Image 1 (cartoon, rainbow, N blue to C red):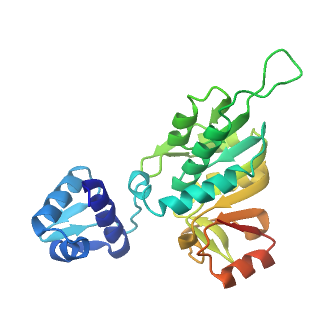
Image 2 (cartoon, rainbow, N blue to C red):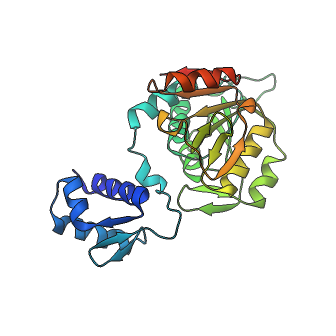
Image 3 (tube, rainbow, N blue to C red):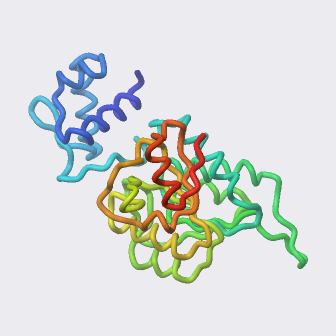
Length: 266
């Protein structure tokens, strides 16, 4: 197991329990206690956790695993979900997309698909193959080098955990655009409450994406289905399509379809 994999595993254990003991972590990861102590010391230096005698605790009451440590979780499923979602976005459309590991994979899939150049228009200058409006700094950075994709960033205050821009500046830009489709990553999907995020500011931005879009596509692996998060984005009545993996429970699939959501499993 590499250091990156150990760090991701340690932070996941910490996110689940809120507290971590060296000996327990060493047993769980099948490495030496000395290795765990070094890992915890280095993570503490990066302010990812608080070191304690014999272990570590999470920062604050609510702990969220930063984006860079989540990218390896369920990676094959997320890539399949992303490819299927990208197929639902038409050439020349205006797409809104929020931050997250699965939406980042969607952006990458679209970048590969639109590698053939720009779309011709009636005038002398060609139009973009795709216009992307995003509040995610990492997505904007990856797509900015693609000349065939027009990138619009929202502005706002950056959240270091997710690389997302939030706040009044973000909402102001989104209120002035019209989207063909919004592709959203979420932290929870509940049949009664709808789709949710861990933080109210990110939920507010995602809600604005849904209000400005003609179609709404939710992309998530099945681990988020049936789970609730702190802040509600919108009800399922606003979601047109949900793309997930084949581990989707049959009962959840039925409830989503009854709510009017088209479910695609890959």
